[in-house]
Image 1 (cartoon, rainbow, N blue to C red):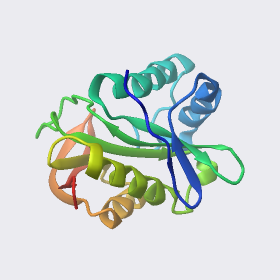
Image 2: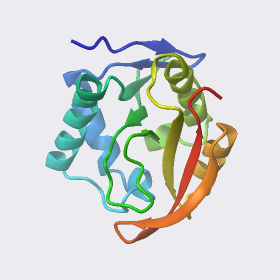
Image 3: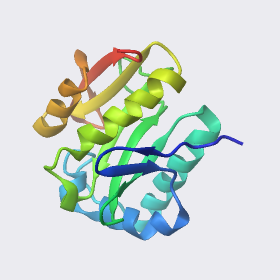
Amino acid sequence: MTVIPTLETARLRLRPYRLEDFDDYVAMWADPAVVRFIGGVPFTREASWGRFIRQIGMWHAMGFGFFALEHRETGAYAGEAGFHEARRAITPSLEGTMECGWGLTSAMHGQGLAEEAMRAALGWAAENGKGERLTCIVDEDNAASLRVAGKLGFREFARSAYNGTPIVLLERPRRA
């Protein structure tokens, strides 16, 4: 069985998901402010369950995955950050890369927490990840996430569309 690490930053604990996180997870993905640039449509409870279980299972199938983000001071669920192998139907393909992603509850937006969480996750990936290249996709209108990606060392390598939405494809070395 894969051991999912727990990482800590100044303000966050990046930890494995627990079933007790599910109601907070549902609330986050039902929030229009959260999904605005991630498909644009709030998730149903059922769709959130499928995504939640995928986040847990990714660790066991791939050896990497998403972390639940917990605010260290308050213990509040803050969102998620990490890696997946989504096998998306996009060109150019990202298959075989650790695709990075992050999403925060709307209460945690605008505080620099996505960058903080991903810096910790990227540090873990440098030592424990797979492949030489990390990727991410960002809606071309999501200026905040494009800024985060740039601060993390990601650079645009292509533009495409995913589910009809124009996206920017970005990459960086795993060991930057």
